[in-house]
Image 1 (cartoon, rainbow, N blue to C red):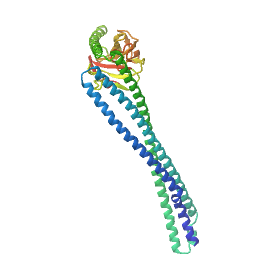
Image 2: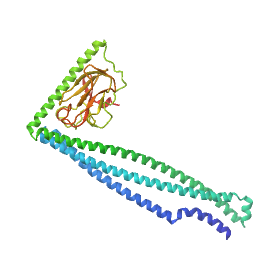
Image 3: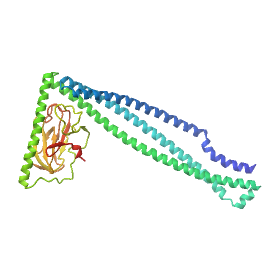
Image 4: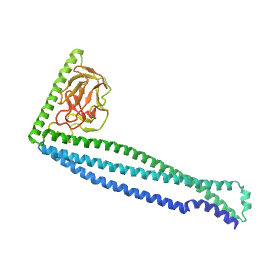
Length: 405
């Protein structure tokens, strides 16, 4: 009977760790909490999907209105739908942030649970090793003498073999738990990056909303809800842009010829590519952007980079200033001639720090950004604070994103 008890006790110790009611209860509690979190995450995803459907409705209305005749009613309709979309964008991102926070909570819970399982498995393995150590301390002769029959001896040897198998199994389980823990860590890091991205997107969307509100207010103030006044402003804006485009083309040819005559050769482009003229930020309108609000006036020949009013503008590459035009309350800009047929234009400038024919080096401060409706250098019908940045190749506008790092 003593020998039977001696065999049963180790088996009982090995199995009790996974048979404890507390362990089972704790595991079920964790699983229930994870299930609840998964349901909350799914609810957030469903709400986001509904918002995305509504956002698409606003996008379709905006595109349709942009195709229609340019009049005050259409422009106000575009602005109102852009406002509604901007507000929805903010709400959508807030829900995305809630969703990611739930994902992070779930992963942290899974990591905690996995650590607990690892600790339990370590305890289990320690118990097995202690039992093995006790058995190893006995010699083969002692084992034979302790067992009354050959059958008992064979059973004892089999039992030791089972213990060895249990050690290998425990080690494999630990390795698997460790890998799962590392995988959860990667998911958690990705979720944290996603959360940072959405927080930045939320700030950008808040700025978009403020810009759209300012645009609508400014348009109403300038036109006093008069279609006649709106058409007059529209014509002035067209003339202003057409004149600026013509001046840029003409001046570039003149300045290049002048530089070549002085130097006896064409201007060389020695810089290691372009740099961002303002701190790299959200691009609010792309080159030939189909959603550009004033596309009916002209194709957008630049990228509009979000920049707070008065942001420092730096030369994207070294070169000669071909034009530093201060147009007062009109459209002010700076044009710099570079080598290899390249030129850059910086529009909606609120302050200019360089003069015509001045040589500037890459990164040098050349002025301050503008674009806020009704301010110096912004021009008419501007879309809010930003830098209008053009890259021209042999006088023809090309996509700046192909040149920016």
